[in-house]
Image (cartoon, rainbow over all chains, first blue to last red; front, side, top):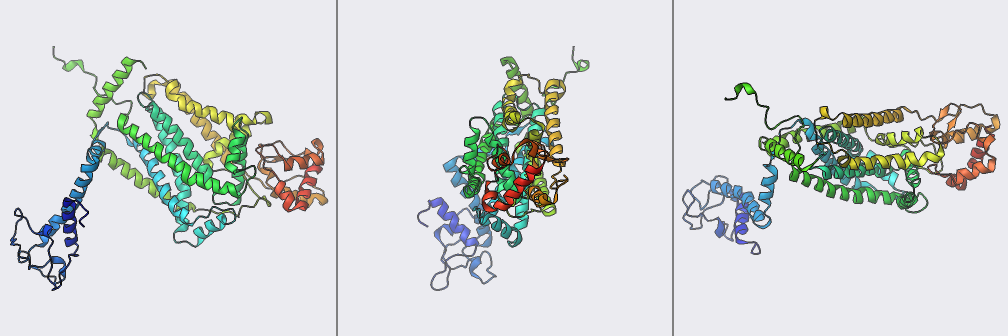
Length: 310
Length: 235
């Protein structure tokens, strides 16, 4: 443990003692690490002669006060561990001032419609988590994709539930995004100084729809296959870039094996990365500019002249 | 918004913010409840509606109904509304792109400093119209049936061809008599308009967004011939 800084070394020693993992010496006596010896500030009798036992050594009735250290002191020390770890991190990152600024910043009073954005974010996180578990079983090759989904749905423990959550989570996420967008529109929250955040939001909407489009093909059943062919052909009908975009999506001129792995990579690597980065920018701007307030709230109520002193 | 209006807004907002509540726990509490509700809805939908898995994708036996997820219905319906083939690119790319650009430019187009919806009649009208149009197209897309039956009188030698055609998904986009989609031109009398060879050529090398039937011809030429013969017999 010598590679750790002194402060942390002491704390981690303390934590171990509380877990009952104190090293014992050859003669069965507990060797108390120096850091665990009670300092002058602690209560209880600490004489430091090294023949007490730790609460973790198994006799179960170690009386507090007879040994070198007692339970109370150990618990006390253990509760300090998270604090000192946080302190160690904060000394090096300055994270606590950021966390304080984010958590305790003041937010104008608002109604429940202001939770739609965070709910959409939560849906995104749920999609990411369920998506990771689906990816553990999914095989993005044209020959095996359908069978791997079938295996996942029918054989894997909770497989159908996770797949259902991913499928319907997409619907929930899209609905929440549209509601969030509508709320922003009707509350005029896209206006100065939050114009840029509206633009990022529209890009997030397009990316989420692209997630829906690329994910639809992956089960590789009839419905998803043919709907995607039509979808790609619709892309191809666009002017100038249309045919190139369609070729890129298909991985060639024909709809084949390359298409599926391409859609898979776009669905689980490219777009989620972009989404995560842009969600970060979206949240940064929300924190920097502040959550908007409902447009009918006023900071100063109109004065009533009746009470005004003359 | 001019500078005076900007300053006025920022002043008003900072007053409101100072009178507000700390993010933690005020907002975190509400967001937390909402997160639990969201998760509950997702799990409930997953349990009740499940995750269906249709028959395996097969490029040859095309008993398919090219239906997208419900949130693309409005785009799909746009295709049906725009009829002439020369204008299809408008429905596929044109209108959606214009809508997206307008959506992005919204804060720069709408420069009215007023935020209260009761005093923004034009913005409210535009927003309500857009939402109503999208809802209308979505409902149209959801209720549009996906017929797989052709109800035209057929001579016995084309009976098999008719079932091949019905199973090939042509009805997803083309009208045969009363049934079928409107995405592509009606095929009720296609045999009168096009010779057999031209129909076969179109099937192999179609114009977007129609899928090619080249694979069917390679894998099952007999089936392909039946399909072509049946279509050519429609007069």
